[in-house]
Image (cartoon, rainbow, N blue to C red; front, side):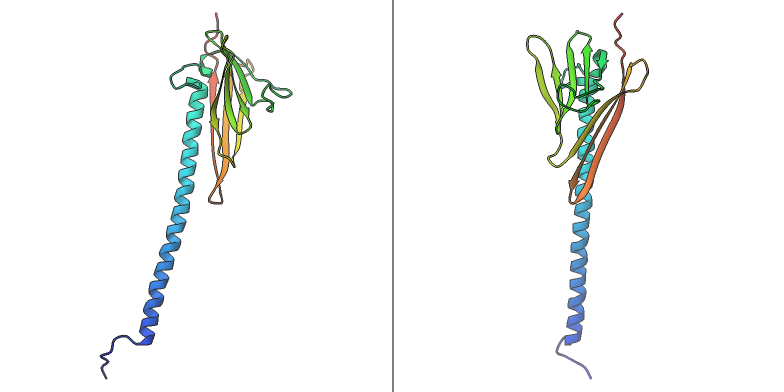
Amino acid sequence: MRRNSGFSLTEALVTSSIILLLFVSITVATVMIRDICSTSLAELELQRSLKNVMERIVIRGPGETANNGLRSAVGYTIPTTGLTVAGSAPGTEIRFTDDSNNERRYYLEGQSIMYRSETIPNPITRTVYTAPEDATLLMLFLWTSPDQQTVRIFISVTHTVNNKSVSGDLATFVSLRNIPK
């Protein structure tokens, strides 16, 4: 017997169930992809920021065009005992003198990496980088050679994005190459 009146109730329920299942699957996949992408983008942004900070510390200094980073140093000092001037733990500050005999320093202060130039008559203090509000920021300066001519710089930031831990870290070495004669 042939039916001319459309779908039966069973066919309509099966079709509706399949459409609902597809909709839920697509929604779940979209949310998962969004979370993965936002976490990955946060990691990339964090890594890019740390690369920029490291470039400022080593090459440029705190300004956009200056060349008064650590590679211009003729001498380094890394306080290793007690608290530093900024109240930070040992190894979180480096002081150096550049080839113009200006005293400069980079140090960790709370959630920020700071720069200070003791240039007379106008000392300058600038923020080089501030970590996200819920982040953990770590910066260390370590001697890597017995003659204290090479410094290792390590910067790490960890924070939470979409209930996932996102971290970025960067390390480099800087050798004292402008040794006064």
